[in-house]
Length: 396
Image (tube, rainbow, N blue to C red; front, side, top):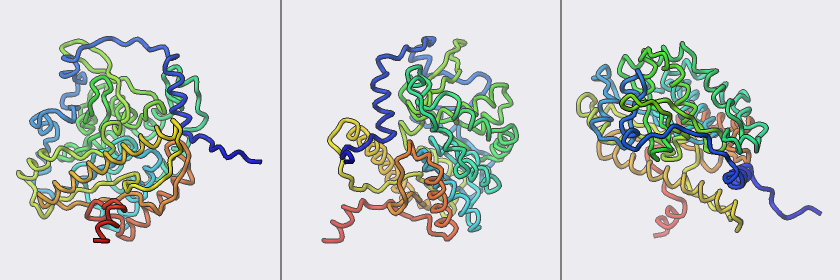
């Protein structure tokens, strides 16, 4: 007779493992630094490399200033987190290219799996084959093979210290950095978001400025930032990034950008300020590519600790996504900017593999995104109303 007891999902196993080993982990000593130093810390030799997402508007405007973009249409692509669901975004980009309607983006931002996609989306259709390979060849699936509880105990994440870094290093080549630097010189901007755990704040990294700096540490920093943004806590290890403040060198601890924000759209005042100088209202568009589901769906949750924790994390992430989308949509409407949203709908398949890094699953999502974008049906101009709310409104 089969047991009626459900086997724990990989996410639940991860949560249990992290909980049980937390007390056993021996912390790795770190050089101390102060909150005052954290506030002014910079990357050695690379000015304008980053800023806190909640920094004063003058700071953000200076970092994102793009004098070379004056007079061009403004097209902004924001790529969300989502683990293996990033395959959907890769398919959308490929299908969009083949439809002949994909614009050149003035600004691209990426969080988590969106950060891994962002440099290639930024550089255009010629890099679509790279995204195809990452998400459909089986390469991404190797990230979550053979989990090790020993790795968790020693702070290397359930799936080890080197896999994600090696994947990033495989595709972030000197030629890619040179291409990003060239586009930065034209006034285009590529941003990646990490979570600074020490400061408990989101950090925006100016990847074009890093690539164009010519600093000896630039290639390593570029790779480290992408790795940090995609480092799902406890799944992959946190990244230590070298900075300095008033001559004092130390390391900050950074993880997945989606801990703070599942998708990042540049602070509204920055967009409005830039548009006021150079972009006509009829020529501005924001495209938000959500590598995940945003519509609440019903699922009877088991009354046990792991199921409740897992569902709570998923619910919180979805709620933050919807709040960010609603704010972006309201801003776009108020400023006569085109708003375009695509996301994984409820008809798409699901998976129980850790973070969705199952090759067959990723291929199916890729194909869905590709077909939608190729046929011109991927994008919609509003944020969907929750199904329960929609039914209530319809009945009135």
